[in-house]
Image 1 (cartoon, rainbow, N blue to C red):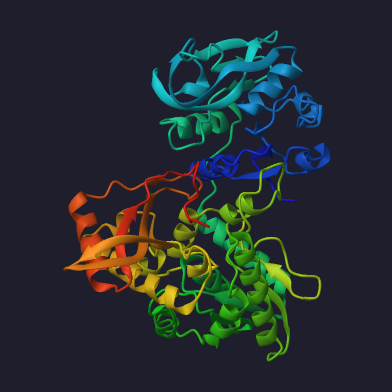
Image 2 (cartoon, helix red, strand yellow):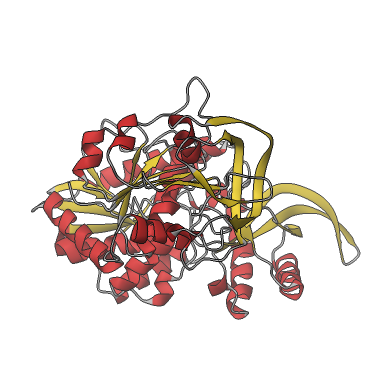
Length: 511
C-alpha cells in the first residue's frame, strides 16, 4: 500500500471528495476511506494526518457512525469538520446537542487566537455553515480559536494533542479561504510537502493499467465526451493497440454527435468501432417514464451491447469506463454512509453473468481534474473543454416517455441554444448548458393562430467540480435570442423557460 500523507475518514458528507481534491490541488496526496476503516489499514498508508469529514447523522443518535477510537491514540494530527468536530468533542468529554435552528449558509469567522492553521488567511473571512447540531460544552484541553455570530465554537483546538475541529466546511467553494486552511493543516500541522501533481497521477495510472492488463485486451466505451476520451487516451498510452475503443450510438445523442465523435477519433488516428444500437435502446425505453428505470435500462443495454461486441474479438478480459467520483457518490455508498441521489449507468459494477473486470482510472477524481489530466496527456483544448453529457443521454432530458419525435424536437432546440452560447463566448465560461423537453403543453399565439405546443426549459449552470452548482446569470438579451430562435425555428415549441435552481437542492440534470 502506497504512502498517503492525509487520510480522510468518510462519514457520509456529499462534499467529502472535495476535501481530498483541495489537498491534491495543494500538492498533497490524500485518499478517502470508510469511517470504520481498520486501524491497521490506516497505518499501512503511513499517513501524516487524519481528517474526519462531515456527515448527515447526529453523533448522539443510537445508530451514529463512529470510527475506531484508536485513531485518537496514534499521535497523528487530526482535523474534524462539522460532524467530525462533534465526534471529537464527544470523545474528549464535551457536549453535543441539537441546535435551536439549523444553520445553513454563509457566516463570518472571527479569530479568537492566532494559530498556524489560520496562517495567511483573513480574520472575518466568509465560511460556509451546514449543520443541525452544535457543540454545547467544550472538552477539557480544548480552546476556542474562532467564532461566528451563531457559533461560539466555530473553531477549536487542542494544541498539545494537535487536534483541530471546525464547525464550518472549509472544503466548499463558499468558504472563501477554506482551501488555505486545509493546506495549512497539511503543511504546518502535519508537515506534508507539496509533491503530488497530475503528471504523477498519470504515470501512476498508466503503470497500474499495465500491471492489471498484462498482455490482455481492454474494451473501452467512448462517447466523445471528456471522460471517455481521457480514458481511451490513457489506455492507449499504457497498452497501445491492446485497447479496443467502441462507440455506441444509442439513439439518445445530441445532433450530429456520432459524426463528430468519429471525426475526432479519426483525426487522432484511433481505429474507432461504431455500433448502431439506437433501435435496441429506444425499443426498451418505449413507454418508460420513471427516471430511475430509464437509467437502469440504459445501463443494462450498454453492457449487453459491449458484451456482444467483445465476443467478436479474442483476448478481451477488461471493460474500461469513464466513471467519475460524482457518479459514484450520487449512486451508491461505496466509501461510507452517503445517501443515494440517483443511479448512474456506469456505477455499481457489472452483472454476474458478465466476465469482464472493470478498469475505471478516473473513479476517484472530479471533472475539472479529468480536464487537467487530459491536457497532461496532450488532448486538444476544444475536446477537453466540452460540457459534461450524461451517459443516459437525452433520455433523461425528455420528461416522460422517450420517443423519436420528442428526441428530434429536443435536439433542434438544444442545437440552437448551444449555437447562441458559442457565438457569444459564453459556452467556455459555463460548466454545463442544455435544454429539457418538459412535455408540458401551453396555449400560445403565433400570427393570428392559437397554438397548444410544448415547453422547453433551458438549464445553464456554473460550477467547479459538479458537486455544487449555481444557475448562470446570462444577460437577458441572450436569453431573448435563444427563446426567439427556438420558438421561431422549432415547430411544436411555443414557450421557453429558464431553470434558476442551484445544486443542492436540485441536481444539475432533471432526471
